[in-house]
Length: 268
Image (cartoon, rainbow, N blue to C red; front, side, top):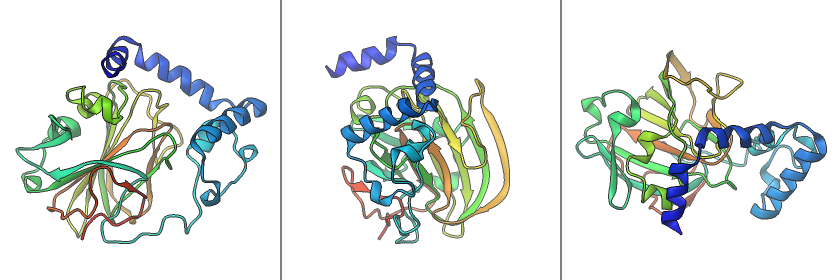
């Protein structure tokens, strides 16, 4: 079944499917969007207690619900370097020969992921990958205070990014659509990468009202824009993956397979 699922992803028109799903998710027809939200809630048992708006009728569309805001006390910040997202820790490790692990038996080129050369100062750095399932909170936040230097949007494929696909599609993260954020920090520089996926209707950064739709790479110098730890970096309009790449070598206190929340400390 896994091989059939992977083959299916190679054969289908990924972007057409994602656009169709996106059209449905943007619908503001009250009875229709309420029906979809309630069906989703029935499948994934959403925790409404931490949402600012606690009723399906309060959302203008499924996308509005899917990227819902949480109450201020829902995700306390508990360390100097915290998780950028809710999700499952799929892999952690140290950078070796400018490569990172994707899944058992697969690695990828970090420069390819970033769309630029990896500074030598990152050669002894670390990485952590968080997979966001459909039921998770889908805003991604800055794990550390710093200055946002550059944002790079890289269009690409839209393979699923779940564990099965990561274990069978070589260079998955370097193939998929992504947003690369480069930051400097007193604690060490870092990259935060948001990876798009199948039926994800887009990656929407915090500074613009719509997700990227370009068919070519976009570089946006951010003029050392100051950002706070826990500030929103962007959001996925359906489930995906966030990758944190740090200049400093980290002693991660979370392990692959662990479920984490945004704001939870990542290091000892």
